Length: 298
Image 1 (spheres, rainbow, N blue to C red):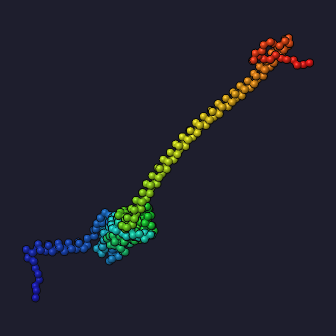
Image 2: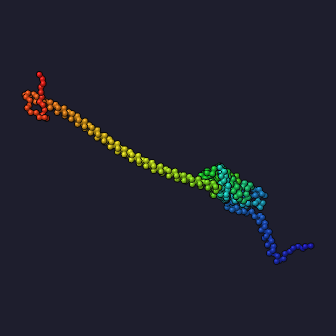
Image 3: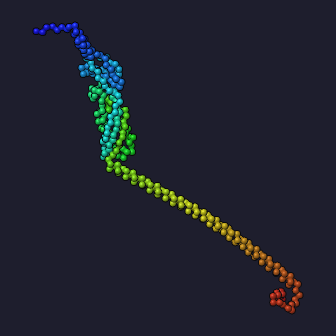
């Protein structure tokens, strides 16, 4: 019914086009050369089964094997408003940025279980929120504020262990927006204000006490100085009085001795007069003249 198909002299270009197309399709199917970019690994599968891992660079594979490019570069996961609760039941929120990458030696495991291209964003976000809840539950609200650096270290350590289960490794964690409920923050601010007022009052009281102690010290010093002056004056007066008394005593003793000497001299004079009296009484005696010594002896 149909005769053989023949091409005339003008049909040669069509043959060339068809032949080239067939050759391109054949080479595309049989082309054995692949390229693995920097920061990636090539997962080689044979009929769906992992049969090898290719490093960066050129890979030569037979047609029955497939190469899947797998990302092991550092990636970033943003966790906004992760919620937790402290040991004293205070709600707390935080936003974090986690930088991570797939461990090169864990590529076959991750490819088989979790991701065919290395995208672990959902796993990292979920693990970070779980770790944040577990860590904050071990601290009270005041401890979370006072020991924020320690809390950050605990979150980082726990997240490293958690992500290691998925074949990922943590590069860094940045915490930001760490906050409590508005009512609790208001209570903290009020407490801080009261504490500052209390410290101010204590400092003022200490200043007043120091001033009072200084005044007391000055008054005691002045009193001591006055007492020392008074004691000095009293001591001087006592010494003067003692000296005067001693002087009067010496004078009295001198006067007493002088009186006895004078009396002795008077007696001697009277005796001399009596020895020289001739027994004749004077005819005239003045009122103040002494009466001559009379010998009343027989």
